Image 1 (cartoon, rainbow, N blue to C red):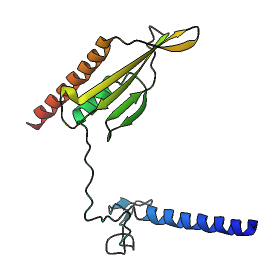
Image 2 (cartoon, rainbow, N blue to C red):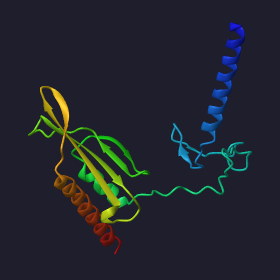
Image 3 (cartoon, rainbow, N blue to C red):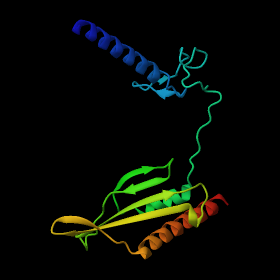
Image 4 (spheres, rainbow, N blue to C red):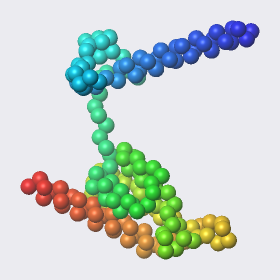
Length: 177
């Protein structure tokens, strides 16, 4: 019985590795690259690229594929990152428009820390295109506990992001002219 299970496991592993190799090999960009010795190496047609059999997953084709546009405003995104530059980031998703910071304790108040979540809601540069949530905790006896955040703090943070986004947009328009 254990020999049979071992053979099935080995076969499944072999098939998984073969499929992984096929998927990695099909990720060619068609560009020319510089080789190790300084020679130019061109990508040639293979069974996975132009003129070959090709590999199409999920019923689509490369001819009909369209790059997904970023669904958030680039100025709001950049302004949010610039405004949060003093805080460490836990995650930043440019396609979903979500930025989540780590907890940050200002040096002047080490028993208080903040965390900021930024949500960019759409592709237009509008005041209602961004939502910011600020969380605050205080330390008492070595234990962090949630504390209320002044509503003005969130408004000031949103205004700082919007002001920076406006400046970035105006600079981009000026450079275009």
